[in-house]
Length: 181
View (cartoon, rainbow, N blue to C red):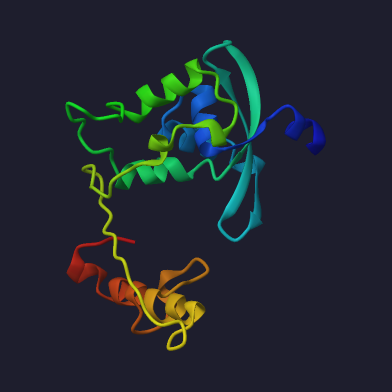
């Protein structure tokens, strides 16, 4: 029952699942896909999956209800931590950082160090991400119109994005840009 799951702190974010199970984002994503039949759509872009894995500290099977457990694996393909510097407060790898978190027995995402969430937008060899900051007057263009007409939001099919939007232009020019869908 859900009350018990919440009381036992088994409803967690993907980052908390990484720390508890000491996995990488890609390992959690693989686990998510293995349990695909145990996932439910809660709202657009928000999924919960019932995942079972061996807890590496206790060596026992544990079941967690993980929110968007696929996301961090996808993110790892497109982002990477910046290289450590002499005075860097960031660990060399996310895995090292997760081990530190697990050793300190953080149960709760709110207790996780802020640096855990820091990633730069640098390609890691498998892909890359470009970030743009845009500003406009809300009186001249509503947010939903920005998403639909400029970004080109779609339910699931990029080919259905609004003509002239960024997504549709990229889709229409995918061969020219050397992209696959």
